[in-house]
Length: 267
Ligand code: MLT
Image (cartoon, rainbow, N blue to C red; front, side, top):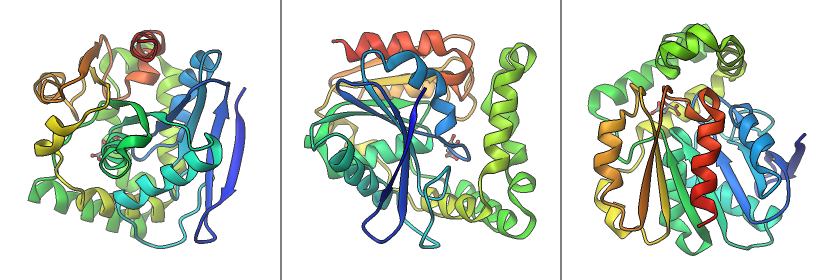
């Protein structure tokens, strides 16, 4: 069981988290267009050893979207605000999946000393190509004009591997529910922020915190072979490839994913 906590943010906004457990804090940053519920197996499986904090990124879950636009750097500042309120300013572990990974990299860039360790999951350090950027802006427009599901539905087949579609119906239903529940304004704001994100490729060698990079064996969005290549550039890094998973490894194979986290967190 996790507690839902809502904190009044610096601009009168609400920042929400779902949290459970005690110990070193492990902040979990969700992917797009999803929410904190994608981390249910980590809240359930790791909170006997860690203070697990699943963040609701701006506009998703119970966090409000008070300005129509923001940058990923702003989201990293939200994490720092939450660290202050929930972790007593102690260093934290930050794990981000895909969009969450882009935010985790921004957090490292702005607050390297606040990190005990970094987990970059099913994500990539590169910025968008022009084509990817224009695809994002079209999706943002479509979400505002026609609703979230109409806009994001083509992403579903890339989220999960075939084995998950065939044998884990509860996971498929949860992913669809998160996608349907995302507010059009949140979808649009997140797409604009991701389209404008910084390229971290040349900064990887400067990461000085222990880092775990996680890939899904069959992830078409952040392919495992690409991930293995960039992970090597982070000096103190380990790579874990989670078998039989697509883009959402923490949900598709929670036991293997949690074990990979534990192996890293206990070092
Ligand atoms: C995600 O899962 O967060 C998305 O695939 C990120 C993206 O659209 O680049």
